[in-house]
Image (cartoon, rainbow, N blue to C red):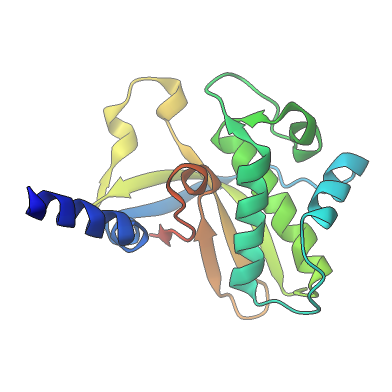
Length: 177
């Protein structure tokens, strides 16, 4: 019994590391990238972030993930994907989560003068130990899964996050194929 408790605890503690080593994301297309233009969205982002003069890219991305998780609740139903609407409706599927997070990232990149960085919502496929998991589902809901790529336009450095996964398992960065 102690072994099971210890193993469960270790899996929980190292869930991010385990997930990044077992699951890879592959982009199969782009989604629309929205600009924040409504008062509610702009105020939400601005009032829920600090006034530090500089933050590194990973800290800014983690703030965007946190703001997305705080604002949205997951739904399997059809929903708006525009973050300017989601700020009021507060429900989204993975498409809306990715759009909201990407828009929030891009606003924060401007705020913290990280002008070389851009967040882009992606249509993706997940691979568990090299096997595409979407082939095992017949529902159109599971044909793909959206995530966000954050790219440095100068160096080409790329980071990936799954805001939906972050909302439920608190895993920040994911691995891309």
